[in-house]
View 1 (tube, rainbow, N blue to C red):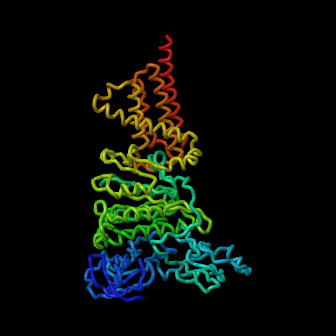
View 2 (view 1 turned 45 degrees about the vertical axis):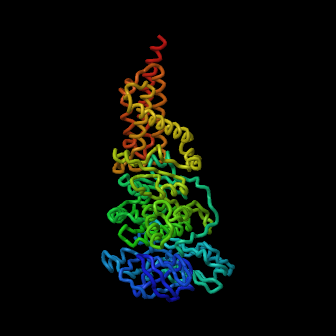
View 3 (view 1 turned 90 degrees about the vertical axis):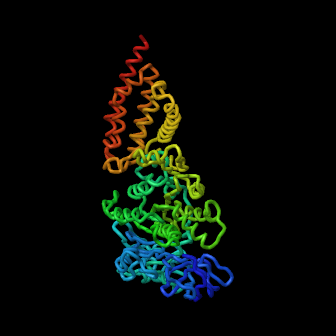
Length: 596
């Protein structure tokens, strides 16, 4: 351990001498309380250190110790259901020890070193070793498993940084602590049940796979109009109060990911409190158990040290990659990347770097790319399939999507869920604009959706075209009123209203409507578009729009989302038969009148 001395203090940025042998991004402990920091720049004989804890009272001349290793996360059984801060300190344990405010230098073990876990070794691997077969210690090899929670099995793997040697010993079935050896190699290397991994270094993979499997969220506007793939990247930009956090909460609860990692990065304390109190009470719709059994929370509120906010997203994505390597599909909710970018801006200013747009550092796009590029659907080193999907909230000041964080984020994501202030004020949830949003994954997931309904692409296209026509007509209606429009255009307005009320809008407090399965989503849209085509035929035969409005089909269609349950797809048949009979009768009446 190299020892130096603090020479200058500028908030969370410290300059220390005597650390010339240390490397860039090495972990440093500063002062008598040994607060954690990281070397972010080396200038001659001085190291510029970014500290992740409150350094109030730190003095010039205090010692600084370089540990010689990078800032790392401890990966092993016991992560699920835990609440950490940005540098993986367990907040619940520290709360019991220190109360509501952490003292500088407090650590707390990320994983309990005393707790024993039941280890089940790989039967195939154990048989090979028992028979005397030489088994290379290949990176990513599954040594066995530990039941971490009722929902998650933690697989114990050979870490990627193990090079060479053969497995000579494998622990038998039994109870072990995390730092005991799960296996030993012929080179004398012990492989513990928990291992450290640098948070800024992506974990290696065997290959990247095509993002052609959708991440089903149960939100119709997302799944049908703007789908996200497993391993994809999405951004949710929106001004204050438009529903970014609530949309992420809904996706976290209902999406078909195996593991959820929620990163509260610089958000207000009351919002993070809601997450911490609500998530343990939420029921996992897949298992019926607590959602926390497959959820991991990282809390860095706006009143916590700003530097820890900067590193929190790297800690979160490292934990996600750990579970991905086991073959799980992981979804990350980062709320919000704007607060993370603000932390970058403050730290950059403290280091006296040349500012770029709006004071953000010139390397903001690079850092955003480093984060989002760690997403992906992959084949792991153990030949399993896993994925990390990243959904990042963006909080542009005043809802201005032209500001740097939103614009640079759009360069590195392929799914953009733009929240609309007018929709939010109208209590339209989720307030995702069908005009400003887009998804580049639609073509890649098309084959999956065509197994649900072969007409998915055509129905989706017709519906989106109709909504665009409605937007253009809305400008005319504001000028001359709806009565001046021909009946065919009035029908477009009526059908668009049904789509908005009966399809795009969801009630998160309705037991039926809070989640919508893929079959029901496509069926609902199919019925609405069939109504539009049949009604247009009637108008073409001379039926006035008032006759179609008087049928009451519009109101019934708008309620189908809440009256037909997910497990009762046949529930649409009754309405469909009534709709066809009503419009057929109207069509016959006006066809006959035209003949006469």
